[in-house]
Image (cartoon, rainbow, N blue to C red; front, side):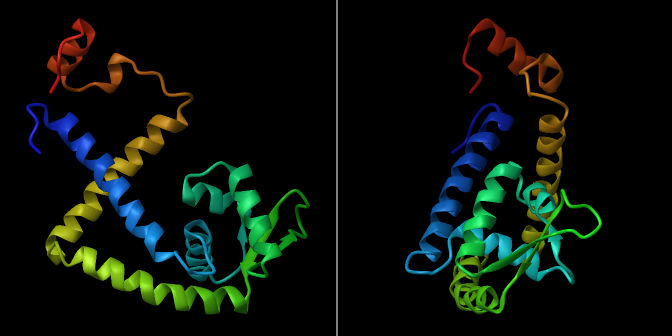
Length: 174
């Protein structure tokens, strides 16, 4: 779909694509013993050589620490993770995966990789590299906007003055 305002069009297309890719991701886990969140946490931990601070997992996932804490607690109950208090700082909780988590990750990963491969077949390797760069920039900008306090829609976030003028007048931006 084409829009007169490229930024708005890209925003809408990015949201729609995100929703569709998320739905594809949900289908991977139907019948699996892992949820999507559990799979992501295990994937993060598999990439590490040592245990990881629970707070760091929350940061990597872009989720609230208490949300990740609840997921990690459930995963511990299912025998997927081991949680332990850091010996140097008792306020810090470290997390590592169990052999059971590794086994389920490998099984689910086969299905996930088929879906990922099929989806990425739609774009060339060069387009994938460009996509990775663009998504990295958007992620970085979103993190910066969110981390400098509560986001307030202010004029400083709008580089396109014409779109801002249209919004302030209540006219259509599309």
